Length: 278
Ligand code: PDD
Image (cartoon, rainbow, N blue to C red; front, top):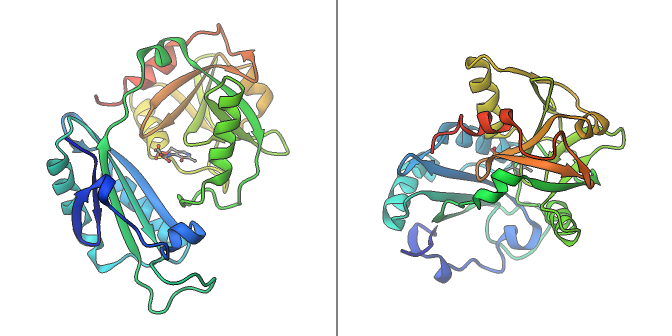
């Protein structure tokens, strides 16, 4: 079994797939993306929701969806089958096309689709049992973080900054000390049994996992609210966790070297994690 790519209408081993140096994703980070994982033995999880967000992201940066768009679920199904992993992580990237570098949009515009099929990431049990550590960093991204674009330089720089300090995550915090999100995940706090997550704004990606948790938590009678959250209350929370398609709900037990709650992953984080199918 090897990583698989789908590009220019064909499946090809990922390490043989090539994009042009003129792909605007390469020259301008001019593109949008989605990451979808399969669960329960190869079923793409919340695929319709991921497609809805992709439509919103593409429209938000004026990239038209290509005519092949309606076949993408079939391409994904075929890719999962061909790749043959127990569970697959599907990366979908749509760029504004391949054309020599020029700032204006190409005419005619032919977006370039890339998909990759890789094993769904597995995380060490110790990450969930012991929790992870985060630093806080100033919000330095553009004010359309609700669009899932491939322009992720601040995200990767801040992730690396966290690594250099022996931590795994960086949390973007506004000038007014509002908690936004992690480099590639949404943030939740727990205080006195209530789950709180920052309400959506321009600096927060509407995470598919975030919404899934909000809906399921409400159904199962957990108390959950979306509202502005501040750094101080995060530091004083009983539990902090982050959520994404690739980590489910991951406990954060230290932020800026300050212990969160008891310093060990809390029961509500674990309960939320169990809301996700295997
Ligand atoms: N990222 N916020 C940011 C900035 C993200 O990049 C992601 C996910 C999330 C969580 O979204 P979701 O629950 O829909 O996965 C929030 C993906 C996994 C990535 O870039 O690999």
